[in-house]
Image 1 (cartoon, rainbow, N blue to C red):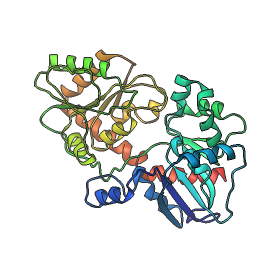
Image 2 (image 1 turned 90 degrees about the horizontal axis):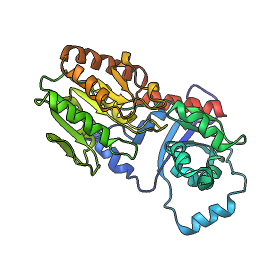
Image 3 (image 1 turned 120 degrees about the horizontal axis):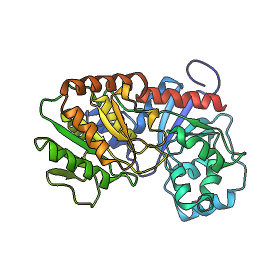
Image 4 (image 1 turned 30 degrees about the vertical axis):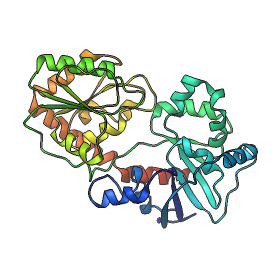
Length: 347
């Protein structure tokens, strides 16, 4: 299948209909965003003769009704069709019925946590769509068995694929002289209450430290903590470059909330203190410049961050180790290679 020989040589990467791929490429060309395509899937070119990005068609009531009628029908595969990838489960139904496709591979990001919240019956349409894939992947080892159980014995193979980020965009920077703590991210599994408690403790002991949080939380921040609702990729890169340490607090989840930010911070050459949830040690280890702390433990978050702030030389060494870990394992080139291998294994 890949350039190294055998099987299909064409691939398509299908993104949601609302994703402006042209604008994404333009931002990347100007140096304002990571990777040529979202998630760095342009690097699949290293493994296929040709790879094309496409938008999935806009959903409609007629298309949804058609899919319900065809839900029990076997999926149609084109012998000459391309290998198709889509990033997450929200696109699985449309991928299942996309024409001219040979084999289909879909990522699963949030589903395992949704099953715990809503129950498997509420997500039966998602199960039907995913069961039409030739393979699915998850980014956390903690998701593998729950997803296999959800899909059932007739489901497609479930693969664990490690994530990656654009280390050429999130470049390493010298450790800063002025102390700054950053925290970034506002998905539903972030723990703003614990984070703000930790930051309040940091401010009490080190009032000289600047603290910047990117979050959509409506919880009032502690005195001296600046909260911004949104940052572009370029603004994030600049913020990481000024940071001394990043602090991420999350609730219990299996999809490794905080993973992307954590790897971006590490790629910049900064240590990170992050909540230990299931699968988190796939990515973050003490040897790789990260401190993992228990759920809801504001004191542990602040204590680890303060230890780094009070030892800039040690923090700089931890940041260098973090950068090396990203370069060796967690780039988007690594991610694309793993997805290509997944398709080969499934075939």
